[in-house]
Length: 311
Image (cartoon, rainbow, N blue to C red; front, side, top):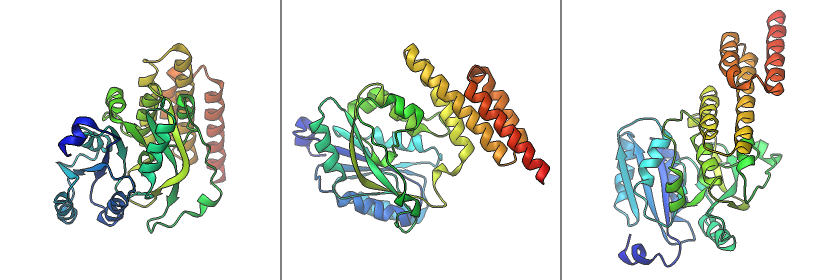
């Protein structure tokens, strides 16, 4: 970054963090959407998680351009670690996240920074999004999906999962991101919502309700391991419950019980009775006092038994 920008940051300068592992067919348009941004003050930091030769050749070509830095890593398969490696290289006043298979609208950064200027008490922002298929076509379900806007103090909505954030929609002051500790590399999944909850404990959030991000769904998404997602969320809620006031602790513990009950129900729905029993026993120590946990778990067990008789 030029010395003058480093010294004064007369206006926001955004470090854009992109983690990648192969998937060149998606990375190219993702990077193109960065270069198409109407906000001119940015640099791009790509953290490569040990990709193959074809993608590395593309990254070496990108690295020859101004404002682009590539962080070369040995493969770990931990998205949080890859993002954190890029964050450590960031020098902008703000950090924005873009996954290697997603797309930004051209005015994404410009509109978020304008919203933050209009809401000076907010130190981070997110936008609405669309889900698209591998070709970039909006999914049929997007025609009826309802987006519920939440702004300001959204900690409770994040815990309850009623506020929908996707990583490529988030823009955050770098100082706030560092104060929150970045992504938790010990979580097997749900590391994104874990970070959003920690940001929400420190600052209200500004929302741009326009869908400025296309989130791509395809057969190589990191998020396809559904059971790992439940495990990551449980560990995140348990961790946060030790660091908040009693009212928020009660909220986190209630949501942890709901998460445990949903895991039992999903195993039962799939006919995985031993796994359902294991999830029931595993969540009982912290969930037994919540009626909803009992109701969901018993309903799942009854449904599993009925399906077993039908077979």
